Length: 139
Length: 73
Image (cartoon, rainbow over all chains, first blue to last red; front, side, top):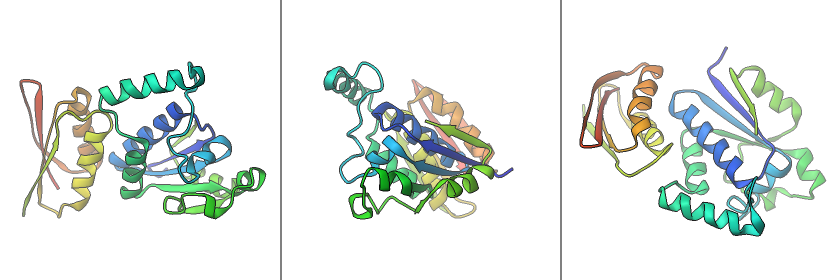
């Protein structure tokens, strides 16, 4: 089986987007290919200006929890989601945007970060990626 | 054959691994890549990546919490 990682990015929560991008960059760094399939709440993070907008999956506390988490992350010198995304693209990572989510949520191509998106697709595109991956995650 | 230096001191997961991979991609076969850093897990994970990529791990050393890893492409 090919050395490839595929992740369904269903959640738009900030901490889960971090997990996604850290794992995906790790895979690319260790010589694997990586594809991220952004759907539902995850796709909202690909909207222009949306990458850092997710709430915390726990203890968000109307944003207080998130800002405390951000402070701690800054102190620990954790990089921004934007930098992780740029690194992901530079290392050859692939991003697929779910067309059905775009339709349901009324999101147009021009609303999205077209600079990041490799292709637009549906479940068939995901399965084609997943069937040739040795690691498949749903976040 | 040239020598590429990567300084990841103070950087945390996953930056040292990413920066090492970027440097390897830019290097030509035979080039030496020297990565310096302080993130403890990366000291053992970068050699794992080097092995997975089929490259040569020339040296790993540590002094006062700062490690240096030498790779040949």
